Length: 426
Image 1 (cartoon, helix red, strand yellow):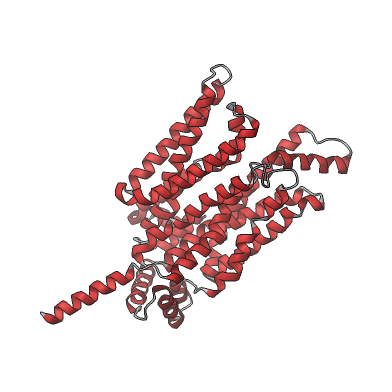
Image 2 (image 1 turned 90 degrees about the horizontal axis):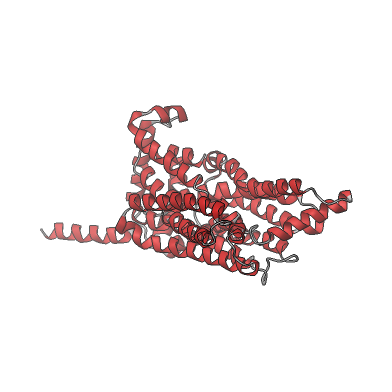
């Protein structure tokens, strides 16, 4: 009886250890999220406020080259390319996730990815001096590649670094930093700070600072223990990484858990996309992942932030006040994302997803109607602003969490979660 009591006490102590947030784990989470996820959000919103000054730069550059002003339609085309090259680059970046994480590791991929951000930051920051707007468009593609890699590798990296019972809590940190990045870009984009004719190149170039910090600090932290053990076959390094992350020496149970997980994956086999799509046992999980990722990617959040100023101007907000309304929208986004941390476990992921997507869908439909009727019905302009706010709230509690909470929850409980992660990345 006494021995059983000691075993139970030892087991309870071990269980308590599993949930501990150690300093190395907290630091690597913050460094990864700030150096990568923060920039994803920053570059979603950064070109919104300085758009008139950037378009004026495009026109002046064209006049200097050709002696005549740029055609309005051509200028609209160039600006549309500037906006759309970012998500296009994200598509290509997502396709690079699989080869890079398997050959260079999770941490190695994040370090290599910083090169994209720093190069793009230098190009955008010097574009006015070089008198070329083409490099801005090219840099947006490069930043998109960076964002596509970062938005997929960071959740994978942190999920494999975290103990099982902290994966949900740590998984929300990247999304929180994305919203913080959006808010910081909106604040720095105020005309009183950097959102003016002389400040916009610096505003665009600042995106390289988080990457430089990550490039200098992340090498001092361990690689993913799972990658070291399973893909590199180096048990000693995997043990050392776990010991540092967990704060104690006895990590044999986690090592064995990874081995069993790898054994299960090998028994199932690495599935091709065709096999995965036709495998009956994973049909509903696969459908859930595809539907949720389609809902997130097609929800329109980027369009809302890209064109928020124009929406508010068309809704009747004074030009001088539009930027402050946009910042307040960013603050609401951060607040609701932070609030979702505390309600997700009590209400459940499914309810939040349904409520969030429902609010997004309804507000978009009403917003479309309001924008078309605001010239004939005076109060429709106010309804447009309300719809944008409701949309932001819905996205913050629903679609924005899809990648960091619901998908890891599905993947980590499936034998071939690594294949599903790479499918969702692409």
